[in-house]
Length: 179
Image 1: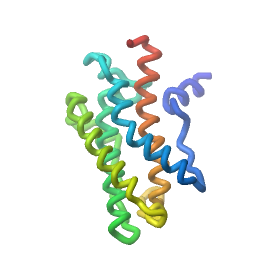
Image 2 (image 1 turned 180 degrees about the vertical axis):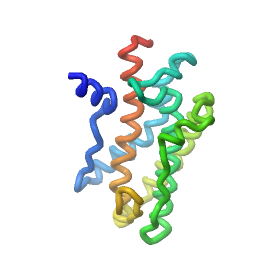
Image 3 (image 1 turned 135 degrees about the horizontal axis):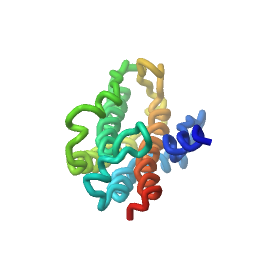
């Protein structure tokens, strides 16, 4: 029972599952999900005080503040990966230790520093995603730990990633009765 509760807290929208084939309609929904992430995040953190922002979303997990900053870090990295794959032949991207990044001093700064970054980034990212051809979606980058990933794979991952972390915050708010 405790393991199930931990899994539910860790994966409020379920674990990521990559689809082998996606349709144009699926892709459209994923691009829309990426476009909507900043507004959904902003709504999820609206009205939270400093103590609430410094509350972990689960025992041993990141604080709400760290989750917000992680989204900016991670989505910036993903945007760059898209651009590298579109401009180079199967580039090997640089991975990073997200846990260590979440411990850096900038992850303790006000969330108002990352929210506008995400808003502007997602507007640019969505414009880029909307411009891709069918062939572009099959372009590849090489992740040092995951191997080859198509842009279609990465789209799926990041459509899920935004929902996943916003879900951490909204589930915490609900559990704690934070209005």
